[in-house]
Length: 201
Image 1 (cartoon, one colour):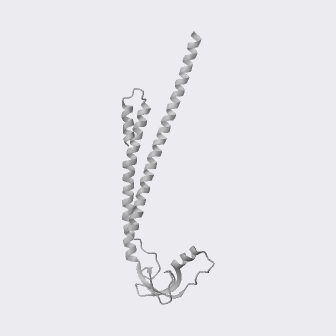
Image 2 (cartoon, helix red, strand yellow):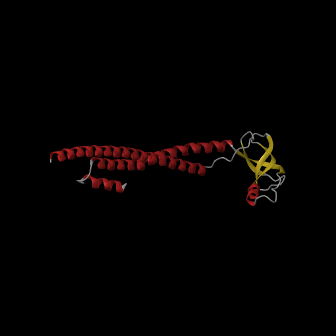
Image 3 (cartoon, helix red, strand yellow):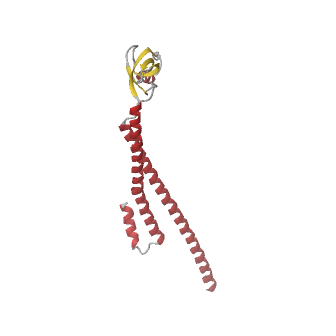
């Protein structure tokens, strides 16, 4: 921003400046202001809107999702010894087991669930369900919602800055094309004058 203002100040009284030079300097200043102010405002507004929406989702999910105790009835088969260690470790972290659980409304349920590591029949662990006992994902927490809102704001601000830069480049390209056409006309006029001067000498 400071460099743009300094360049505009130098062009202000420069005897060699052209009108297009001054216009380009003002255009650069306007673009910088749009990026700083417009992009910042757009990113802040988008981030705030995303934050409010995500926080509402956090509250709704917290109200609608519940942790209940699940009791495994039969553990899944262990991974084969010749499988990759990384894949085996991943399966050990979240093993599928057949379990039963009681929903918040008192109904009984059973089925395959992801257990946190190796569990034995009768060893309880926590799972997330809705009020009717259907398995659901863990509800989003407030910190995750804030992180997503910040990313949304940064993304919108970046898009706004990109649009401003693209608009500046488009206008500058048109100004350059107009300048080139003007130069071509001046060269044609100068060539005709030289031809007449040579014929009269």
